[in-house]
Structure formats: C-alpha cells, structure tokens
Image 1 (cartoon, rainbow, N blue to C red):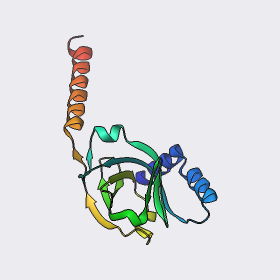
Image 2 (cartoon, helix red, strand yellow):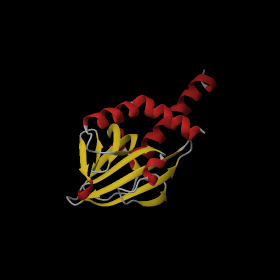
Image 3 (cartoon, rainbow, N blue to C red):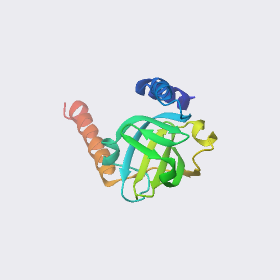
Image 4 (cartoon, rainbow, N blue to C red):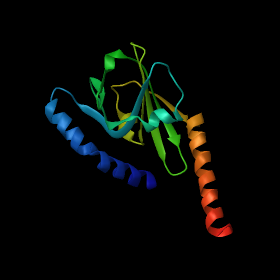
Length: 163
C-alpha cells in the first residue's frame, strides 16, 4: 500500500503522465512501453548499486522506455546500443523500488532508480535480467549518517541534560 502511494506521489511530483503524453504526441512513430519518475547516474564502469554522493547530484527526470530507445532527460540511449540490461528490485526500510542498470557498446553504464512499476517487467522490447538486490552504503553515506546521529545526540544533550 505504501509503495503505491509513494509511486503516485513521486509520479505526480515529476509530472510523469504529462511527460509521457507529450513524448507520445511529439514522437508518433514510437510506442512508449514504460514511464517512471527516476534518478539517474552514468559511469564508465559497471558498479554495484549503492547510496552515495553521485545519487545526491544525479539527474532527475522521467525515464521513458520506447520501442526504439530509452530517454531520461538529456540522455537518449538507442536500444540497439545496449549490451546488457538488469532490473534489480530493492527493498528499503520504508518501501520497495527498482534500479535499471544499462550498459552500452560505448562502455557507458547507466543506473536509474525508480519506484516499482510492472510496466518494466511486462514489456518485451528490452531484454532484462531480473534480480533481487540491496543497496550498499558508500563511505560518504555512512559519514553523513554518523554526523546526523552525532548531531541528534548533541541536541538531546543540550536540551535535556545540560539544560
């Protein structure tokens, strides 16, 4: 239930339905198979999915899968340039999501984080390897969490003990 609410909220915030309709109107020769609000990163190596600084500065846009390409903001990835694609289902403390990992012939590796959406598993145009995974924590992510916990302890001390 929380997954559906969260997906609807994120899609509303990103304007996913509007972006999809606009793309379909402007590209009548293509069929949109899946659309999702997404955060995306590109790297030069096939990295494990993990929390980190690159996700803080990631591109945020609607991710579209058409019968010819993947489009996400400024990135356009023709399907015939994709050498591998994995859809990794992840569970977090509050909800579930998925990360689409795409590798191209040029050696670019894209990761797109989004809410769970069966459009991705039901489509037949992009061959996907389906996996279950979990997010790893980067050094940056661990440091931010430790600083946050330390600050909360400091606030509790100042308010209730030193006070």
